[in-house]
Amino acid sequence: METINNLLQTFNDLFLIIANAIRGLFADPHSVWANLTMDIINFIIVVIIVVLAALILILLERKIAGWTSQRTGPNRLGPRGWFQTIADALKLMGKEDVTPAGADRLIFKIAPMIIFSLPMMTLAVIPYGKGMAPLDLDLGIFYFVAISSISTLAFLMAGWGSNNKYSLLGAMRAVAQMVSYEIPLLFSLLGVVMITQSFNLGVIVEAQSTIPFIVLQPLAFVIFIIAGLAELNRAPFDLVEADQEVVAGPFTEYTGLRWGLFFLGEYGNMTAMAALGATVFLGGWQGPLILPGFVWFFMKTGIIIFFMMWVRWTFPRIRIDHLMKLAWKILLPLAILNILLTGLGIYIVRFVMGG
Amino acid sequence: MFGKGLLQGLGITLKRMVGPNITEFYPEEKPNLPTRVRSSMGLDRNKCISCNMCAMACPNKVIKLTSEKDETTKKKVLKTYHMDVGRCLFCGMCAEVCPTKAITVTQEFENSIYEPEDLHWDMIARAERKGKVE
Image (cartoon, rainbow over all chains, first blue to last red; front, side, top):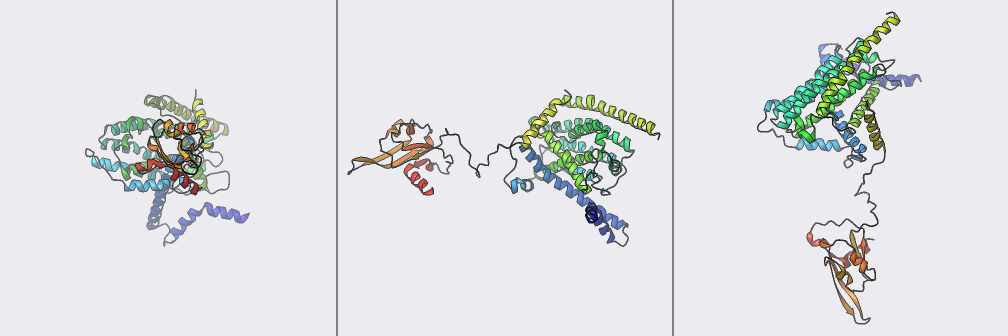
């Protein structure tokens, strides 16, 4: 029993042990050069997480789309079609890279790069295990929301730079939708911040050792999921790239690898949002059973991602006036109500505890 | 109200997700066709008495057959039997009218070809080839 526990503990801290070993190679384990090396390694790991997540999720999405409509999804390449995304990625790389004649070249070319860089920046503050956050920021949630809201700008750049009416329509929809839904999203996270008195994601996970915040803040979790879906421009809130209405929105004029970058960024952002949800509401790397922390973390993230896909292939698209009404007249009051109730609850608990 | 319909929809899709698929893996697994499917013709050369009734019954004049008289038995023997399948409806009238059930409607459906000339089926050759394969 002792050895098994030791083994589990070793597996739990596997990445910390590796990190310490790499630091140990330097004369001073906390010198500037050691820190720089570790930062670069962390960055590479986050990039690998984004790319792997996109590769797996694109296929998973198509599989789930198939299963919900009683098909099998891709089934030709590899065992049961699990290599399909690799073939798709190779195809995208082989495509011609077209820049439209009337396009604003600089903005047109920068937009997909910005979209792709955002999930890397946001996933860097997520704690993947005990002490395993690539960047342990004290303003974790604040940083995460601030960075993820830049994607609005990237969508607008893509839409404007394409010099295409559908692109611009999609971009304007993106701005309206994402700016509106940012507010309920932020307010739903505020309740948790009020309870823990910290923006640090690591501290928030530590505070959930006894009970995950989904039990204390169920309303906030529902608001977070709805606003998160809208923030990611996923169905039923995919008005930005509504194929039947505006071709593909801001992505209309993009081809080949640039379009692929948009796709990677979309799924990377989805992973980041699911990771934030798992960290803040589901208890991050904490779990009831003795499994390594990062296994718990990725399981919870996976559950949220699966839910997002499930919702996407179930509901029809929402109308734009209903979308705005939902954000401003339903979600925002509910989020403020949740903050009020949380404040009252904290006050009552302090009064009872006498703290 | 309050998302009851949404939950119901999620329940339905979850049921579909875990339920069986209706996809047919066609090239690997052949589909079970309904019994009434008419998609190909087959000829039994020994049963044919060369009465030419199939050619007469055919609405599109698909069937062309020739025969010669066997001097010893005084019976007609089938020489050639050609079908221009490009014009065939697979209506089955030839099979209906055949007194000896020599020509029959079959359910082979993989009839695609590369050259338009291949639409002229030599039914005797096809029957022999099929006999060899089986």
